Image (cartoon, rainbow, N blue to C red; front, side, top):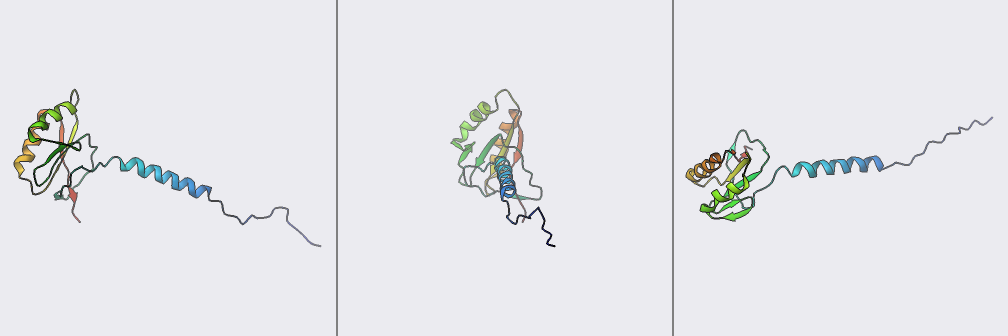
Length: 130
């Protein structure tokens, strides 16, 4: 008496669930990577113990050779106040300063003072200790 099962086990592996997971991970990384916008000019940031990531609405970059940029647009030192005024018009914003560690502190204070005068929150971009 030969007993045979009516239900055969299929040994094929379905990749559809794996592709769904990879697709969701891809979407997640694409969305979260847009929160961190690198500055347009190369800057050697100072280190700090607490390096928080903030939403960057406006970025001001100063390189060690004293080139200034606002949101990746290279401007003169005198034009920074006008650019920040246009960008922060009618709202309080977040200004993130990307300042090279070799730049004198007077430039940091000057740009921070301009942003604070426009009622913006000012943060300094740093890199964490290794």
